[in-house]
Image (cartoon, rainbow, N blue to C red; front, side):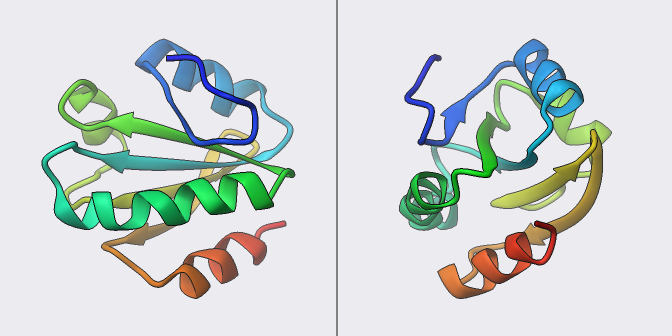
Length: 110
């Protein structure tokens, strides 16, 4: 699914690999499911941060469609935000958190 550059776009497994390995930006990956109420609650926060934080790449991974990725990165609860820097996970945020907490964690890696 292709989306605007300033929004969190949903990506496939192949697109994910390309983004985390070839992006010079900090990458925030939102593991979610359409049936997950906490995921739906933080979705607008992620969109706002994607529009605000131009130096960060935000992507979304649908857990139901990409279980292999979830296993590889040990995602056991959703929502789960993984923060990648230089292709490696440097931090994670599990559960629905207030915008301030999410923003502060991401800014700590810029």
